[in-house]
Image 1 (cartoon, rainbow over the protein chains, first blue to last red):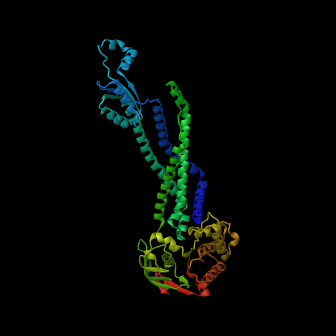
Image 2: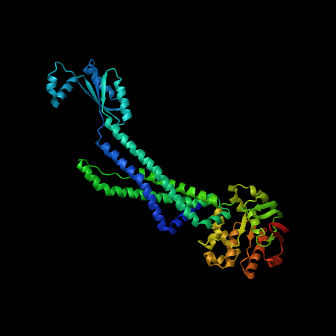
Length: 301
Length: 218
C-alpha cells in the first residue's frame, strides 16, 4: 500500500516536472482547453440565468374550475376545501356566483350583468397548482375536468409550453456543444501527449527493456492528461466568470429598463466540481488513447 | 537455463539473421558469443531477452517458452534478465543514482530500501562517489559501468551483454571483464557478445562462435 502510494506520488512528480519543462506550451494548451470548456459552460450558464429570469417573472398559472349549475354554494365550497389536499394543488379559492357577478361589476361590466334577468354565472373555484411543469399541469387539468361537479376547466399554459420548449432546445444545444468540445478536449490532450511521448521515446524504450509494464509507462502521462484537463477546466471556468462579470453592468441596465432587479449568477461549487471532474476525465481519456497507441507502435516483440 | 532448438530469425525483407540454431546454456556458465559483425550475435541476445520473437523454433529461458509469451507477461520476464548495451541506453536527463533506481521503481521498490540497493550496485562498479552526477559527465568506461550497475541492481540470475567493451580502451575493458567474472563467481549466468578475442583468452569460459547466423563452434 505504501509502495503503491509512493509510486503514484512519483508518477505525479514526473508529470509535474513535464509541465515545468515546457511552461509556455502548457499555458497555451491549457488556454485552448479552457476556451473549449468555456463555450458549452458559458452557454449553460446563460441558460441557467435565462431560466431563472423567466422563473422570476413567471406567475404560476391558475386553473379556473366552472362548476355545474346544479351544484350548490355549500357543496362547491366543500369541494374547494377538499381539493387543497391534492398533492398537485397549492391553494384553492371558492368564488360563489354572487362573488362572480360582483367581480364583473367591479370590472365595469355591471351594465352587462344588470341587463340579464338572472345571474348566468356558475360557482367557480380558482386553483393554484403546486407545479409549473406543463405535463403535470395537463394531468391535473384532466383529473379535475373528470370530476362530477365540474363542468369545465380553463388553463392558460401555452406560453409556459413555449418557454419550456425553448429552454429544452437550449439544453439540447448545450449538450451537443459539450459533446463536440469534449471530444476536442480529448483530442487536444492526445496530441500534446503524443508530442511528449515523442520527446520521451528513449526513456520509454529503456523502461520497456528493463521490464516496465504498460501501466507503469502510462501512469505519468495519464496524470499529465488529467492535470491538464483540470487546469483547462479551471481556465474555462475563469473565462465564463470573467465574461459574466464583464456583462454584469449591461444586464443590470437591461433589467432596470424592464423595471426588474436581476443579476447574473455565476457557477457555484455544484457546477464547478462536475465541470472539473469531466475535464479531468476527458484529459485522462485522451492521454490513455495516445499512450496506448504509441506503446503498440513501439513494441517490436 | 537457456535452450534454443532450431531457432530461425528472419527479418522483414528476407534477411535471415539466425538459421536453425540449437544451443544449450547451463546455469552459472560464462559464455562468450563471438563472430563477425552481422553474424547474428545481437539477434541471439534479443531473442533470449524476449525483445524479439523467433520466426521459427523454440527458445526456453528459465522454463518459459519465450516465443509464445503473451505481451502482458513480457515485462515480468525481462525483470529476471540484466541487459547491458554497447550504447549504454542511459537516461541523460536524470542523475546516475536515478538511472540505477529505475529498474527498482519499475518493480515497485521505492524509498530507503531501493536507495540502499542502488548505492550497493554503484559501489560494486566503483561509481559510488558520482551518484548525483549526470551520466553525460561520465567517461565512456564509467557510462558502461553505470549500465552494468543498472543491469545488476535487481539481482538478475542472467546477464546479457552486447559488446560491452567495444568502445573502451584495454584497461577499462579489463575492469569491466573483472566485474563480469565476479558476478559469474557468485552464480550469475553470463552471456557476452564480443569480437575481442584477446579478452576471451584471458578469461576463459565457453566460446560460442557464430557465422552467418549459424553455429560454428559451441
